[in-house]
Image 1 (tube, helix red, strand yellow):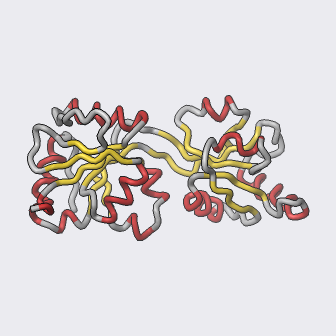
Image 2: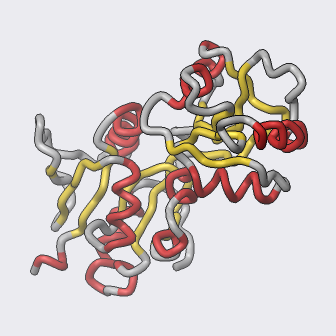
Image 3: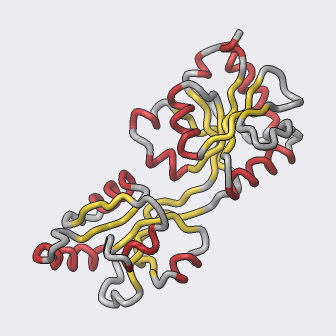
Amino acid sequence: MKNQILKIGIPSKGRLKDQSLLLLKKNKITIRNSKRSYISEVKNFKNNEVIFSHAREIIERIAGGSLDVGISGFDLLREALPGVQKKVKIYTRLKFGFANLVVAVPNDWIDVQTIADLEEISFNFKDKYTGKLRIATKYPNLTNEFLTSKGVTQYKIVNSLGATEIYPFTNQSEVITDITSSGATLKANKLRILSDGLILKSSACVLVSKQSFKESNKKKLLLSLLKRLKTETISF
C-alpha cells in the first residue's frame, strides 16, 4: 500500500546535502545513485522513497504529510508559520550545518553598535523618502519577532530575493538580517554584526511528521530508520 512507504526528504543542494549524505553513509544508510533524478531510495532499508528537495520545502512537506522524515535547518523550521511548526517534531539536532541568524549594519555606521542604537536612529528615517528604516531579510518572521522583543518599532521589512549582503549598498535597505556561519561573507561585504544582534543559533536537524507517528505502520518504519542514525531516541 502507498501509505506504507516511508518518504524521506534530503536537501537537494549545497553543503547541507553533502553533509546529510555523509551522515547517512557513516551510519550505513545507502542511497541508490539517482544521477540527475530527484527521487531515489535507501537500498538497504525496506519500503522507502528518498526525495531531494529544497531545505525549506522539506519542512513544508513534512507538515503537509507528503514526507515522513527529513533533514533541514532549525532556522528554517523556526521561520515557518506556527501552523507548520506544530506539525513537525525535532527528533535531534545534528552536529553540522551550524550558523547564526544575525542583525548586521554597514561598517561606516559607527554610531550604531547595539539594537538600542538601531532603534534610536530608526526615528531619523521618518523624514526621509524611505519612510522607515528598511531591513532586508529572508527571515521576516524571526526578524519581526526579535526586533519587537527588543522594542524596535520604526522599521519595515524588505524581502530579500538574492544576495542580502548587497542590499544596503544598492539602496534597497539600510540594515540586514542574514544567516552566517563564519561571518566572512558579511565582512567581505563591509558589514558587521551588532554586539547584541544574535537572533538565533541554528544547525541541521532530523525532523519528523507528528502525523506519521500516529500511524502504526509509519511509526514502526520511522523508529527503525532513526535507530540506525545512532542518535538518542526521544519521547513522542
